[in-house]
Image (cartoon, rainbow, N blue to C red):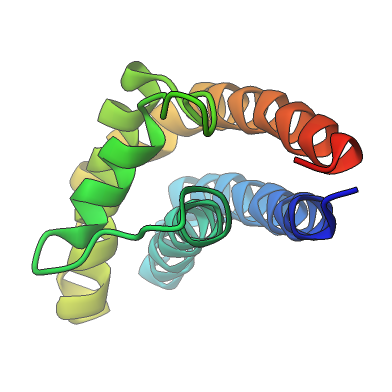
Amino acid sequence: MNKKHLALAGRVREELYEIEQAVDRIQGAWDRAKQSGDEFYLDSVALNLHSFYTALERIFELIAVTVDQTKPQGENWHQELLRQMAVEIEFVRPAVISRETRNILDEYRGFRHVVRNVYSFHLSAAKIEPLVKKLPLLYDYANKEIADFLIFLETRGKEGK
């Protein structure tokens, strides 16, 4: 039995639960922002989009460190981590996410950077709306792909490899 793979699977499941909560909050705040015109709901959407991406990135970091035993370094490590998760590492693991998911997630990675570096009152609904509209499908894809990866982790964990 490989306890580190099983422990990682548990951590990933917990993050997936948190991601689901963020997705629900995004949808609720977006609906309220559209109905009321209140920009404070837009702040909530932006913050929860940030949380959505950051939680996925946390999963990817855990996989990079625990399974791959290497995490990208340097100025572009966030982009490189996405690339790393979208490739199979022969004799180590399958790809965690597809290239398509990686490409869409890269938009959210860029938005995370904006949220961290811009005052919230400078955010615009027009720039946030495409991310909100893509979110349900992206969430379904990412959730399915990570759930498939969890099967790999748990099988590895039980085999002791």
